[in-house]
Length: 177
Ligand code: IMP
Ligand code: MG
Image 1 (cartoon, protein in one colour):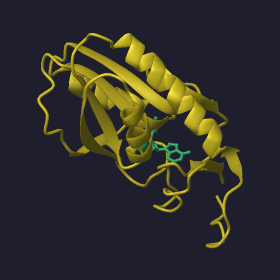
Image 2 (cartoon, rainbow, N blue to C red):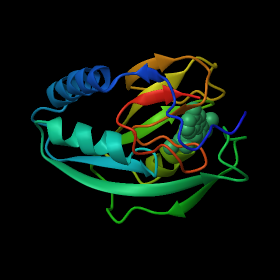
Image 3 (cartoon, rainbow, N blue to C red):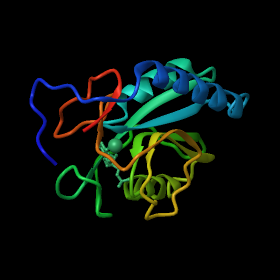
Image 4 (tube, rainbow, N blue to C red):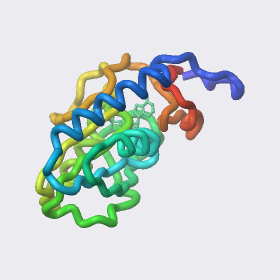
């Protein structure tokens, strides 16, 4: 992939307004699905999910607690080969809790599958996943995506938390390189 010029902004794939509307819709569905269930533990995957989690969590109408994990693929930041490493664990004990994993993007699915397996072993009351974007490439794992924001083409996307070599994370929209 060619390195973009440092002052060039990537073209818009999903606008700020479209993201806002979709996040609102997801929040409405999640609030409805968990109504009356008690406290929900939102688990954000660092670093990409921090923007999505911040926006989603503030729109939820159910009581929430927020925690984070940091995961990393062995090697560079390109789509993972399946080898995932836990860099920072949760502080919350999720046993007996309703847990919703919040992720920015799912490509092969290896990262999410690793996290779901790790969390399931801790016996939450329930465990679901919410991803803002899903790439067109077929999942290489059978991880279940319960809430999906957008289906996107198989391109490298940045912005709204997503990076390319740690750049573009703070763009308010999702752009394609
Ligand atoms: P997977 O394990 O192949 O599903 O890849 C998921 C992880 O790869 C995400 O958590 C991101 O960190 C990263 N990733 C995959 N595609 C992109 C992209 O287009 N832009 C930014 N990060 C990406
Ligand atoms: Mg991520």
